[in-house]
Length: 418
Image (cartoon, rainbow, N blue to C red; front, side):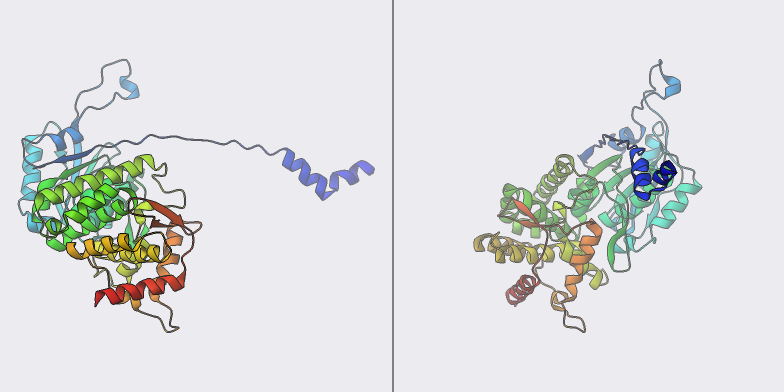
């Protein structure tokens, strides 16, 4: 009897079960690498880059072990073109076909190049992702097939999102066509689309197979589209590279005028900084709290949604950077001279620092922009972590934002806009 009583004791039973628990910790390290090319005339038949990327050397399969790997292979591909890019370069669909014919030993097009809507509308839910997804499945692409996407950052996000879902990832080759895509989003590891007024609510981390930046695409960019890339270059410069900030500030008028040499240098330097951060930041898939490359983005994403995405991403980012820079000044992280340099450089480039939506309030009198803080925290997961400049070229992470100081910063920007 005493023994039976001990076996039924709940505390003894729980201790016995705990003693039987075993935990095995699996730690996986998977290296990713992808090339980022800077070239010109990517679809000129004499330019070998795309053919070498798609039809280049392939390692031997397990069945081929012990034998020499095949040097080249005949790769299947689907090609998607941003409608805005085609409007500026109407020869592109024909050029894709001609290029594939010239490099038939490397590339096999499964269908004519498909032109789909570009701009932020490309990320409107499944508008672009769904037809791409349907075609990848219909043409039975496998994990060694290619999706080639040429266009702006939003277009690449949507096409890349679809490609990342089939077989857990079909190889994606990006041909970014805007300054913003070439120096920021197009060289990164993320895909995504918007739902409702929430930016990038669904998406994946999916490194591209390769990125090919054709600098010739930059020559036909409308001024406002080019300035989107300038805003993102300022973003990374302010928090990571004072020398790049000096260049952007000194070249402000040249960038505003679209001077090709200045634009190309801006794109290359900002892209390299972006890539270095992904490589050296030890958190490429954003498992932690901090996202330095989202400096200024908590307000920017909210402004885009509030505007129904009529506000361009680069414009929203510029305003978000201005807001957080004024906030950093009020917190003693930036000097007045540093703040003035940032805002003056933006003005000379033609980047906005104010929008009436910053001052909009709900029925209770609360600034509607503030919802962006919670949306940003949810997107990050865990605790709030917002990057602020600590001097130009350095940064600090903060885990709370003082609402009264945000209101003061908004008031400051409104006064300066008059």
